[in-house]
Image (cartoon, rainbow, N blue to C red; front, side, top):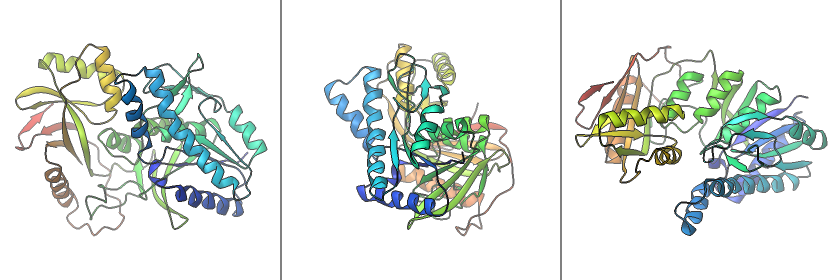
Length: 385
């Protein structure tokens, strides 16, 4: 069975009318000859935070299993919305969620890992329907409890489904065409990267790039699934970036707002906690802030705080900073700022240095690889790790 796997993120669903636009796109694809389509959806933009805050209005420290179940309802609602929009066009459609998708996970609530995916539920649904809508970012553990795969993990669901169904391509849609040399909303001269290597975009994601979930990229590389990053503009799919093993290690600059700076009692304790986080596949950076040893956590912040709490480490007070990462080889440079506008200004300066002739047009830069990591504070003082 030839199945097309698509994923639409929260930025694709900012209002109810966006579900109608995606449904029309699916109808156009069917008319063009694509008879079987699986669509993985994220929650509407902002929904996950609203659900989390509402639950915490009842209990600041809810049971992890309750929090997972609550957050997963955002994707479930989104799946029902798209199912309704597709059905309205006369297309045979069904939606599946974590309980019925066949994705089995461990019981690490807040960010569960996929153990296996049973293709039978989706294949059975495809035999009876033309379009299957899958709620992203969720599965069930061995006891049948709903689990959440982490923030922005619908990408991971889509790649896992593609791999399980034997498809070697997965399309990921967002509000930008693909991966850029910088956030085009912050750096006007940012260039589209037509093809990028798995390792490079996974690394960029861990330092705050939001186009793709790093876990999804790791899964795609392991299972040889090519990711096509696209956007839906005027009802038409606009091609952007291909993520593949033969992609480029393109230079870029990443801006991550609201990174968490956690003061630690000593450098020894900081290094120990960093190792604990790395064991959970969480990137943490050792630094000195206000002349005190600190850990900087850029992504997976909620889960990182949960892991540290289990280690008996207090998670407050936590300072927030904007982190700018310079992926210009052979050195990866990291800068952190309390002032967001200063951070954006630094990112623009870095991009102009990397691409002095950038005119905003898509291009590919020579393939290079980083050799070591250096950190810079606001004073541009170099700290080698």
